[in-house]
Length: 182
Image (cartoon, rainbow, N blue to C red; front, side, top):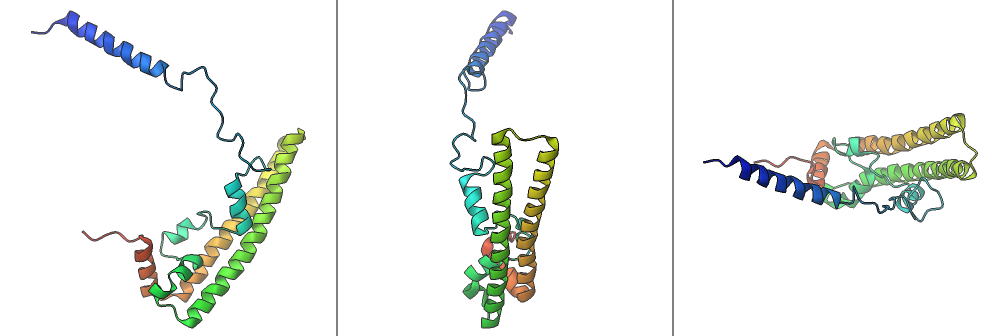
């Protein structure tokens, strides 16, 4: 037989318990939480040390993921897997040239992005910003970032044109991009 009074008491106890747990959580805490941006260690407020290093090195930073995950291998990983892919000397030379050209252009664009980010950060630090200035600066940065992404994607296109279909399939399998057969 149901006891409505006992059920209400149990329900009330559960509600109070949940309330106490919620009130003690950091969401409701009166203590201030530090921002993840605090003390990044970079002299450019908008770039973390890792982002800065990646831009300086011309790193891929996931910019060519659309190509990589759709059977358009990247030159760096193809060279890492050269023996497993059975690359010929001619293919190696072509992929090396693709990677060198991509790296050279990516590093130059990375430097441009860093300088544009530094200038934007400095404008904010100096309090010398308005909507028009910010729009112009962010459009410049976006254009440079788009060009950087194009450079990486174009290298994937060029790399695929050097490889045979079997090599592409082997690459996808070795990189874990193929669905396992059940």
